[in-house]
Image (cartoon, rainbow, N blue to C red; front, side, top):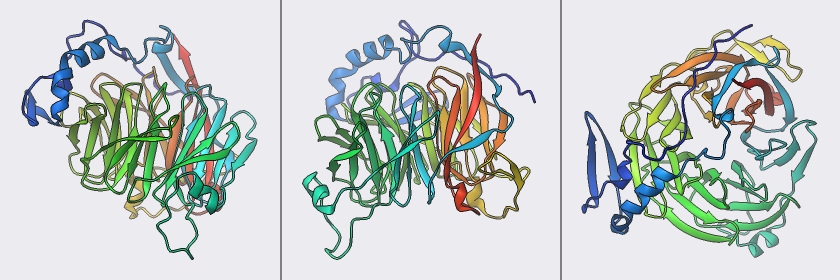
Length: 430
């Protein structure tokens, strides 16, 4: 089977570009609106930001997120899956897999499930190792604050996971309101960060650093320095649960939540840019480049955003709203027919989106029985193909090489579906 080839667009900044970043427009007011024709961006800034505009503008023009990539890496194309079987099981969990991550060299994977199980596994062999939770006394000595009654044990239910780009640290978070830091080399717990007042729902490391960003149901985004074992700062603005967060190399993070907004946090200056979704809760997000973002909504829509517009540049509507063929993939890669409840709107929630860095390839996952692949073009998202994968796709990660995609899936009809799946792809340089 042949699939359409994706188009290519240039990613990253370029010195001397005429593009303007609204973060760097100097103004004395704390709250302002910057107009770009009919679309505007709401920006909330601190007084401390005003003296740094000129320097930040030069930084934005000079810094290229993908400057160290080769010309070939910037022109990767996706052609088709390497195998007609599509997704296959690489590691199993007993409960829903809620988050997955890959090491920078694509050799190791990490996954977490709702029961608190945290696994570290080899991509090629699937051989896995488990991270064992320490005793409550050890957790307290590592900084954990006990809020529950003494007769109630520490809850290990995990919702978020992230690995640092140097492969040294693993961060997890969940219903106990703490962020737990693990040493990847020894798989031992080394630190617990208190501070969130509700469930920790999402985590990400800033590329090239040990700076960690977290989002929570307490509506806040926080920054931490894992190396120094220290809290850095808060960023408020969301009016409902924060559900997803992402970061690249700059000290910025994007977050989405049930308040129907995407927010770009510029951490050092304590500034935010707010983008509003048309009419749905945003469930997932990721950076495409420093000035482009991708999001998934609870109505089955995948959206392309640009920094200079308050509304999405392009909406791929009903991308996951309808169950196409009712096909699932079992643990052996065989396809089975399954009856879905079409009235269940939760199956259309785009709970995960991912982008292959340095290429035009993106993917979205929901609970409709498929992972959808698309090409990111200058002003549009173009559907490429979709591969069957049953269950709720809660998290995805592309290999840095572009050769495969991993997906963390929650159970629907069969506990065996609570697994991490891998799909091999042809990403060739032309």
